[in-house]
Length: 292
Ligand code: NDP
Image 1 (tube, protein in one colour):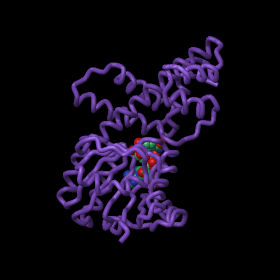
Image 2 (cartoon, helix red, strand yellow):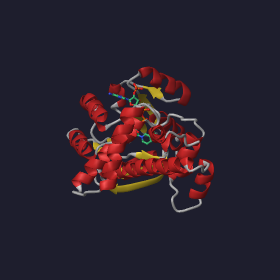
Image 3 (cartoon, helix red, strand yellow):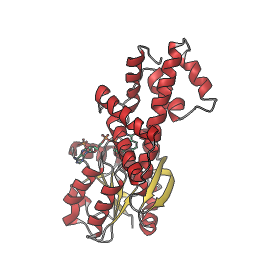
C-alpha cells in the first residue's frame, strides 16, 4: 500500500516539494493557510487538498513554514486529531530550542519529530535535489528516508532533535557572510574601474569564490534581474537563529555577530520581502555605484 503523506505550507519551497512527493508515488495531502493554493496544487500536481483534520491522519506529516512559531501554532491545531505512530518532518529553517519543545508536545501524542531543514533554494526544491540535514531519532529518520529521497539528493542524519536546525542556521549565516563580503569587495572594485563581470570571472577561478560569487551575484545583481526566491527577512531570521547557536556554545564569534547586525540594517533599509540578494542594494547605495 502507498504511504500517505501530508504537506503543510505551500510556499516558494513547499509547493514544489509537495509536488515531488506525489510524483514519487506517495499519496500526498496538501494544506495551506491560503487554501486556494492547495486547490491549485491539487489541479497542477495531482495531490489532494485537505483540511488540517484530514491531513492529521497521514503517516508522515511534512511542514515548511516561515519559522518554528508558525509550526508550533499548526502543531497545536492538529494535536487533537493526530494518530500515534506517525512522524512529523519539519522542513522549516527553524529554531533548535523551539523544535525540542514541539518534539515534546508531539511525543505526548505518540508522534515522533524530525527537524529536516533543506538547502538548495527553489531550484533545488523543483528538481528534487535539495540537501537535507536531519535531527531526531535514527529510527524515525529511516522511516522518513524514502519520502526524503523524493525531495533531496544529499540527506544526512546529523544528531538529535534540533541538530538539523542548528546546522542550517550556521550554513545560512555563512551564506550571509559570503554574500555581503563579496558585495563589499565588488563595490570597491567597481569604484576602481574594474568591470564586475571580469572581477567575478577571476574570483570564481580563484580562492575567494563562493556560492554568492558563482551564482547569486552574477545571476541576480550584475544582471539587475533581482528574482525573488528567498526573502531577506527569512535569511535574517536564520542569522538570528545562528546567534542563538553561538550563545548556546558560549562563543564570542565577532565576525558572525557583526553579520547579524549588518543584516538587521539591510532588512530595515531594503525590506523583509525583498530577495536576500537585494541586501547588496544597500552596499551600492553606500558606495554610490552599481555592481553591474
Ligand atoms: P514563503 O514565504 O514562500 O511561504 C511561506 C508559507 O508559510 C506559505 O505557505 C504561507 O501560507 C505559510 N504561512 C505563513 N504564515 C503562516 C501561519 N501563521 N500559519 C500557517 N501558514 C503560514 O516561504 P519559503 O517557502 O521561501 O520558506 C519556507 C521555509 O523554508 C522558511 O523557513 C525558509 O527560511 C526556508 N527556506 C527557504 C528557501 C528559499 O530559497 N525560499 C531555501 C531553504 C529554506 P500563505 O500562502 O497563506 O501565505
